[in-house]
View (tube, rainbow, N blue to C red):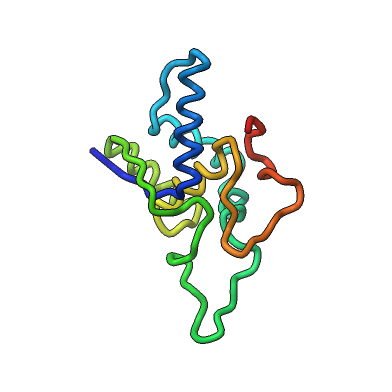
Length: 145
């Protein structure tokens, strides 16, 4: 079944670059779906708490008028309006839904976006209002970028 995930422009660019690099290094062609599964597996190994914490601002921004945004409406680093289209089986989609609940993320779209952001080499998207973190690249992320 066709599925799309909304990611940021930066994540989409890094995904395309990683795919092109895999082709030029003589490896078997990896599709977007394989990168998504690799990113989810890596995030699971590192720990959902770590990956989700990397995608959220350290302190919630206080709005002057009204309440803070609900967790489902928060801006997670890596999410955006660029679409990544893949074909998945019902079983694969169900597995992502289970991981979404395990990670305590509002929906599978956000889970895939933050996992790709954490996994892919290159400059990571930062949470809104996070500023620069000490140490440069994401701690624990793959050091190949």
